[in-house]
Image 1 (cartoon, helix red, strand yellow):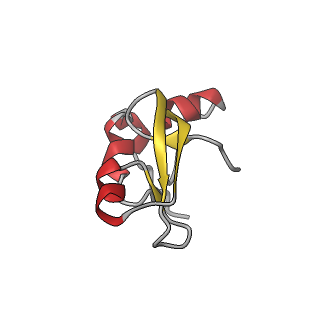
Image 2: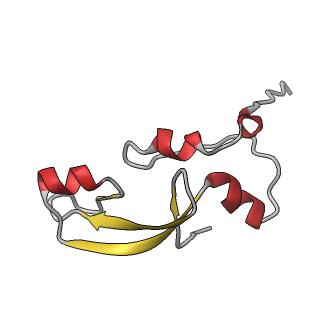
Image 3: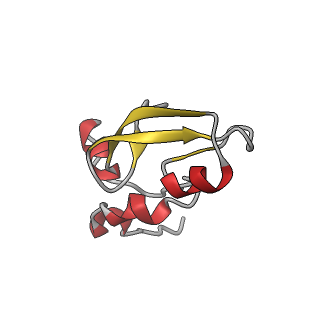
Length: 91
């Protein structure tokens, strides 16, 4: 599945900075683009992981992998602890 939305710790809109020095690189961090430059800034919708999952009726996660260019804490900050209870089943 692909979602046309950024994940973070709030609901609303934010800027996405597309980096010209890193192929495929983009960030929500304003400080990165000030330090390294960027080729494009676009406004994007931002939501929390909880709200994205709720919108699809997902109430359980067995495993989650998050790779958001150093914004992992921002994504996890707004996520309830119960999403991260891991049940390991031996078969």
